[in-house]
Length: 173
Image (tube, rainbow, N blue to C red):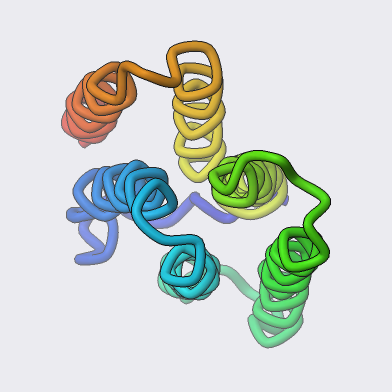
């Protein structure tokens, strides 16, 4: 059940475009951090999983305030959903310590891919706007993988994504 049926007067909905845009930009920053340090990248991606989960849960909670039923069950489902991302990121970085990857930036890229998938699935099950964020992250992943030496391309994708998210939000008001 999609939980985005509340009124647009809700203060959380007024700022959703900005919130989602910031999440996209923070994810692109994560790619840059992985180029700098695998150790810092690990902690950054774990923090991003927590931030994405908190945003998703918080916005869904706000939108569910007008929906009858037990919100705690929905929160538990989301917490489990985002908690699995945290476990998956830890597993990816464990593979890095076992020297499974040849390129030190691979764990960060896989973390971005996992975040993209998790955000898209959160959009399918909880909040459709999170699916848009997930698809933007997937496009960023593809751009980074295909154009590894051209970091400005993902930045342009993130910038365009921010504009699209904000415009989409303005049109829905």
